[in-house]
Image 1 (cartoon, helix red, strand yellow):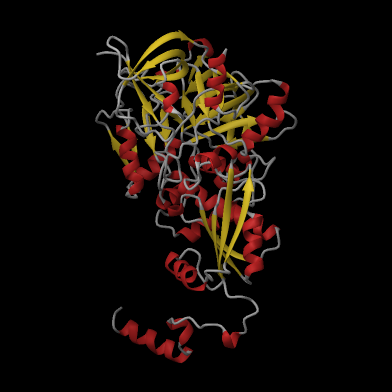
Image 2 (cartoon, one colour):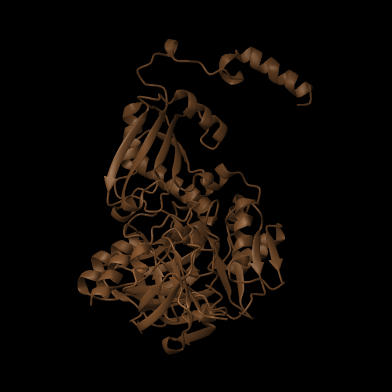
Amino acid sequence: MAHSDMRGFLAAIQSTSDLITIDDEVDWDQELSGLGRLGCERNAPSFLFNNIKDYPGWRIACNPIATWRRMAVAFGLRPDAPVPELYATYAEREQHLIPPVKVKDSRCKEVVIPGDKVNLFDLPVPMVHEGDGGRYLGTWDLVVSKDAKSDWVNWGMYRFMVHNERLLTGFPRPTSHLGKMLLEGYVPQGKPMPIAIAIGCDPLSHLAAAATFRIAGNESELAGGLRRAPVELVKCETSDLYVPADAEIVIEADVYPDRVNQEGPYGEYPGYRSGEMGNAICARVRAITHRKDPILTLDTTGFMDSSATTTSISGAIAIQRRLEANGIPVKAVYVPPEGGVHLAIVSVRKGGAHVARKVVETLTVRRALISKVIVVDEDVDVFNMAAVLHAFATKCHPANGIHLTRYVGRANTLTPAYTQEERVTRTGASVAFDATWPPDWTEDATPVRATLDSMYSPDIQRRVLARWKALGL
Amino acid sequence: MSKEYEIFARHPERVVSGQEVVLTLRDLSPGRRKYRGVNVRAVVSRPPRPGEPTLWIRSVVGLRDPKPCSVRIVEELPEAFEAAPYSDFFEAMERAERR
């Protein structure tokens, strides 16, 4: 059973020993995020900080689904469910979208702070890393926006930084759905764009917000599908937007169509602080609502943070769907969390240079978040990185097996390999490493893998496995 | 304790030129409002001048220059700069500087 709110999820991961509660005072200024950061790097349990310096009555939950165990619990599965099972669960549930329901009563409005009383410094917004541009409120959020010309409502997960008591700056990329709505719908009319930043919702709603989802698709329906139950939504205080009714905190704001301010730098999900600052949006807060005893959620962004798992699963399924739609004979896709959402493994039923090139071109048409794709034959298990690395190292022709595509205006500005100039112009490249056998090679000339299952007769395999078992191995 | 600020600069040499420049300062005073941003027109001095608040300069990747400066705030500016979303923030500051 999936969880209807953050508190239910925290109780569930506490029962599986995947949550550590800390009652001693911890500083919001780097100390608690340092603990969270180390937790990501060591695959440790999540933390719930109950006693935050300067902020009595507030709590912070850290890295909600940064491990596969916690992701499994979020899905309502046993915590040791293997990764392919999580992928299969996501892929099955995303096919059955469930629309949200609107409600009148909501726990996210137990406390309502109108605009003239808003002070963002009353929230325990953490300083996540030493040297960040400021304190980051939106690290594990769900940002709601609405298209100016249609009924399309977008949920996205975007970072937001506190500038002063009422001003936020944020980094939904211009190529993001929110960025598209802002630039095409509101900026030309000089109108502010209402947004609502929901913090501390149920984990699958955040997973849906972070997911790669189709343009004009409503992620609240995806969240319902992943939860197998509709999300309850309540209307905002200052706009016509609707937010999850059980969110811990909701920040209602207007994005300026004609103002900017400093945003970043910030240590991001690829595992670096790359200096992408100077390219953001600016929003003025109009109201804050929250539950009693609120819990602010924090993703201690960096190597192996929550986005590593969320994008691993949703990004891989989205890649698979897109490749299928473009006629590529894809069998499976894996986005390894260790790759910082820059690497995808794609297995295909029929490979070769043409297929590898088509894979990389298909994945970079609109925006290019993945910069490296390893294409393998279908007999390679994409989840088995040892097998993938073996195929890559041995089957990718060093001269002919690398397929490069370059682009301007849609590169991932967070890619650490890019220069500062490339970041500003969003200029980049992606590459496919073709680790498949050329389709014109005949079977009698194709190298045979020197493994038990490939280079031995079925009879020998049977005898070896029987003896293996008899040896107690 | 004397007041301390930090800034993030793409071209630090511009900031320490001795001319009036537009900056976004981050207030490092301890407490709930630590890291509050304020936009100002100011003059930066290196080495620091006695009696002025200390200013630390960080690069665009957040690394702090170990050599301190001081800052004299000439005037406080509006809380945001006029420019379309996603405009280059550093260029927006330079435009404000020329006004």
